[in-house]
Length: 260
Image (cartoon, rainbow, N blue to C red; front, side, top):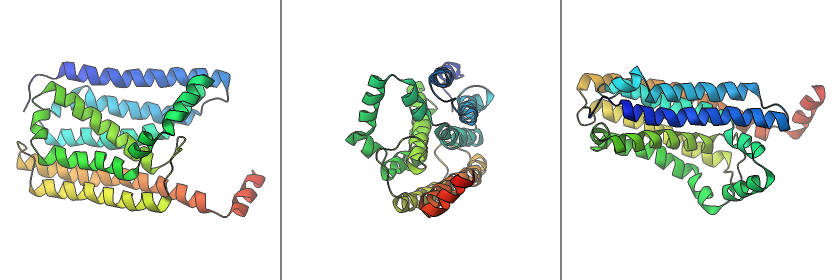
């Protein structure tokens, strides 16, 4: 199940993440010179997320994922779940708005407030792109095509990453959110999305994707189920913390701030 050694594909995907990492660091330095110092912990979160995404698309793990479904599932967890969560916590949009000049920042703000962005960031839409995309990938011949066509390989890996990112960003609000959705709505969609992810892993345990040996499918899907559960737990914990903080009585918040 491979078309080449995949080094060219790995290089293309790795270059994009290296570029994003460098741009973030440069923006953090520039922003810190003009305004309050950009939080160091956000730089750490962004850097760690980029390292995970880079390791998923470049190096021995990425090479092995061409022929080993278990390795592929590790790539899925890193590229589509854990790295996006860390990158969202890095608050890249907030940093970008601080770095741009006023004119460009206003243009970007207008784009963020636009109707297409409202549709794109609706939790229902992001869940369909993320979880629905996985169902299409693993229950059709698309998984085989990905390993036999360089174009599909790049597009699908970028989709896994970007879909994971916007899904996470639509559930936990770290950056400015002109089109915010209620906690109840997001909670309902989140439960359905996580259920869809778990059901898919169990389905593949019984019905492996085309071309995947049964033993690899069993190991890979267990990794998807339990490894994904760990990332889901972190996501839910952050979501519930934000919900709790948003609904606390204002008097409690005032007293806490006064005591600091």
